[in-house]
Image (cartoon, rainbow, N blue to C red; front, side, top):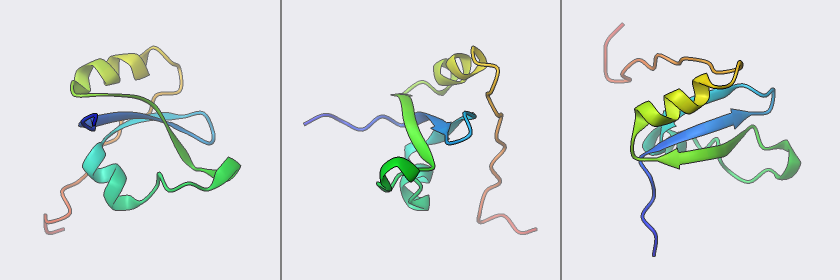
Amino acid sequence: MRRKKKWLLLRGKAGNYIVGSREWYDSRGIGKKRGRNQMWVIAAQGDDREVLVAMGNLTDRFVQMKVRNITEES
């Protein structure tokens, strides 16, 4: 059985790209199958986040996300 990779490069419905952790992706449920209406599709996956960010930067539609820690108080 193959091991799941830690980081994902995701392509959005509008053509934007983001990099997120597998844990975040699975906890949000954004990868649930919705047929043609699926909001985010896995474009690439790997254990090295910097490589995926570099791949995303090759596109002109990469969005740099800054995810705040959920446990952090506002």
